Image: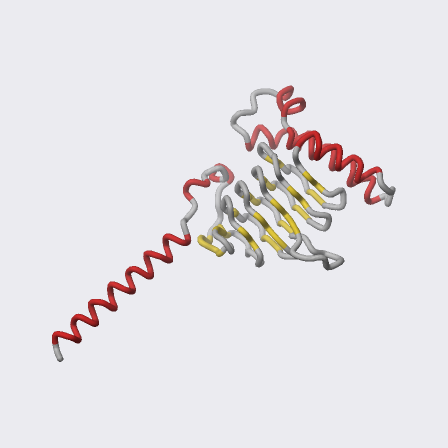
Length: 211
């Protein structure tokens, strides 16, 4: 049952969750998801206005803005949640974790599919922005503060602005919270550049000695 999965995933993902009553009454991500499932059901029935009213009420209550047209799979969890935005044509697979401030947004005013499609087993770090009609593959981790504007293949870690694939290989579920261990792409590129400059300086000095 989806509701049971929605509750169980909180205990799987959040070590601070102590009991089921905390989850039901005190977790805004859970509240936003329950409200969205109702709004999305009504949206699919093409009932006017009411789904948007439920969505707006949920945003006021939780600080999480999920358009009723967005499709969300099982075992979805928003940790803390404040500032999370999920657009109308976003599609989210199973076992996806979003931290606070994540945006699954569009990049323009075009009609049709304009928001991201997320696969299964994905972790998106705090403040990350995933923009446009792009696809994020299965078993992907996106670092905090990253801006993703291109497809990300399966089994990858993407970080940076704009985000680039920094690591290839599956991550284990227990590693999903270790954002501090994500690679610093800018630092890596600076080190590469510094190494190249040092090599060029050595070549230049060597050539000067033999003139």
